[in-house]
Amino acid sequence: MNISVIVPVLNEEKNIAATLEALLPLAPYEIIIVDGGSSDGTRELAARFQVKVVSSERGRARQMNCGAGAASGDVLLFLHADTRLPTSALHDISAALSDARFLGGRFDVELDGEHWVLPLVGRMISYRSRISKVGTGDQGIFVRRAVFERMHGFEDIPLMEDIAFCRTLKRMGEVACLRSRVVTSARRWEVDGVWRTIVRMWTLKLLYFAGVSPARLKQFYADTR
Image (tube, rainbow, N blue to C red; front, side):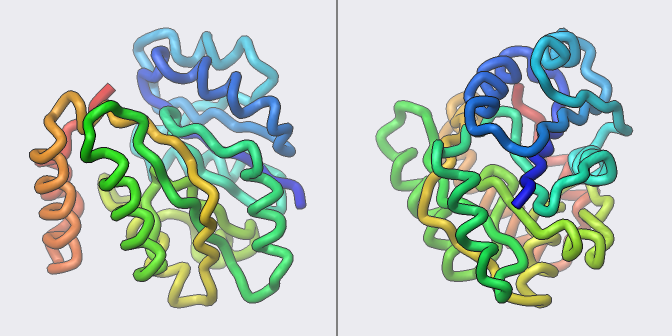
């Protein structure tokens, strides 16, 4: 399978080089960096690597849809700029999607911070999404290109686009919950406080499921760089 990796970025000069240095040895079919108007050196740093760099309107959903439009792979893998794939990632995706029942999926997740509760948080996120079949962007969401096109991509909302996408995906068919783990930055947890972040994230999800608009929820979700 030809797997296109799509990385939406905005002011990620602290992370993008390390992300690409870890990603390139996995040899995906292509890597597409989608810049949402960075004001730092993100775009210039990314351009030093053998990747495609494209520009998009700001907004993670818009950027990921733009990257998908520029991609030519059979499978689309959406990766956050502060997330590292396991070395087995592409093989694991191909193995899962060799079963035609699966339309897409996500990885388990590990947070890279030092606070003692973060390993437990990672396991809880993985367990919750395994039960619900709904992943988050931090978990490396992947999907067959044809399915993505039938879904018309990510909904153009300022928050919860990953949740909305996965909820639609699981209504369409089977979702693969891979046990191999991505490692994602715990910077939000460390900057905003671990317990405060846990409460905020769960509250935002519950309010979203209760029908509160993503635009309103976005007011309480600061971008942490």
